[in-house]
Length: 92
Image (cartoon, rainbow, N blue to C red):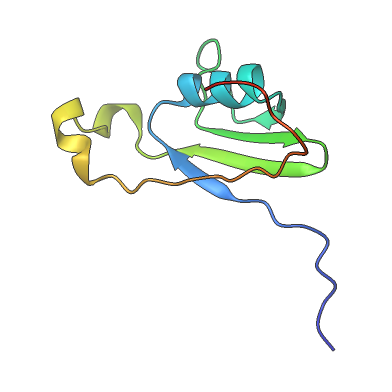
């Protein structure tokens, strides 16, 4: 008998945590539930976000000292998140 599945939480690697936190929290309305120790405002390596029963985890793709320069990031894998909403009249 299969185990009951009560939810699924995507874990996304991000390059710029403060920018991603501002997007998910300030634009989409997610609550930052918990994070790794903060290194500044919206600056940490891991975060759990939640909204309306949906959860999302963000993790930095590189430690600060090892992040590639902007020109070298072309090969980073991109992730997409799709949100089902009843109606949206906002423009991103």
